[in-house]
Length: 352
Image (tube, rainbow, N blue to C red; front, side):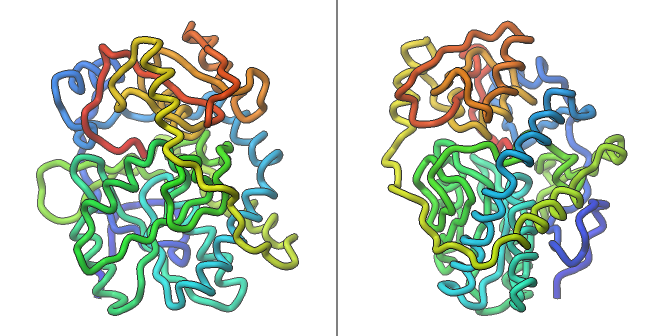
């Protein structure tokens, strides 16, 4: 029996069981964080307090929901229908935070079709692996049922590698994502790089949950509730909006993600090297990952495939405001990639 969690998130109880405990993180500013990372500190031990979403973020979220919402709903429906057919009895295990809204949406889709896909969310930290205690609790609650790990998008595939490298031998790797431009997921709704609306926000679309972290205590990985942002929370509204789009889909299209990319990040790493960034940890391909860099890191450069694509308008605006150089490469395999200065290198940590 899984113990009731006391973390005060804003997701509906029927949408997800949050396998995280409340914790007190080491809070640092962005500049201090980068200095600590240069010294070898794990990203998974540090947290930067979140402020309210900026006007750029809110515009990006709202416009992405209008522009891409129906397509995202179609991806959810196709992926959900595929999982119901091909992984019967599945338990959804989303990777906090970017995977949590997707897991909630998939659970809601299954419910609408009269099926039950239990959904838990837990932490995974690059360099440390999946939260083994959380995984143990999930398996104890659903003995013998297959687990499907859920994330929002892929970048280079680092989390897929971490997942594969840290799961127990008797737990198969089944990674499902909506957008898989890296070509590494087992179940991908599309291999296109696109702006999922929730990529534009952080805690305010993720149940007010912070990034996950470790603090040396045994047991579950931790998070904190960003209470100061409660008035800005759109977590439930986002899921309701996706529900409304899904309701317009008479029958989900068969899962058809398109040709699987083969190591597309190699081309991005080569372009980054030409610009003086040779550490792969400092190269974040994909519009979702690039957005994360601009929201909580110190970006040093922005690569774009198309100078006028609407899914990267917020990145162009953020780069302009911060005087970050923008380079356009028509052959870029992703819509965007962000570069972090070699003087601000992180060696470990999931940026969820």
